Image 1 (cartoon, helix red, strand yellow):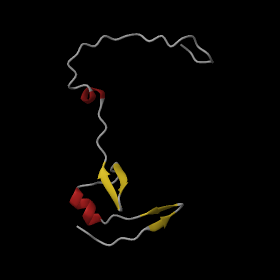
Image 2: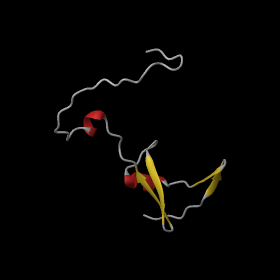
Image 3: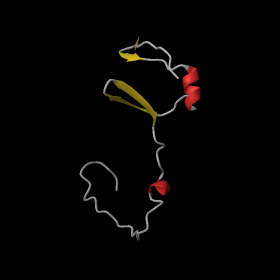
Length: 81
């Protein structure tokens, strides 16, 4: 899928509009989290990886876990402990 687009001024930035048919072909929705990178003479826009929750992050953990209390020291300001 290709289509000509133009870089346009948006406030203090520059921007491009992505045609609806391209977004539909990629199954991208409004408010999609994307990552943009520049490589050689190209701009690459990719869907950002979904942020994992704590269960997903440690799903393959096979070791033992022992909670440890951390001593953060005495208060140095007006914080409450």
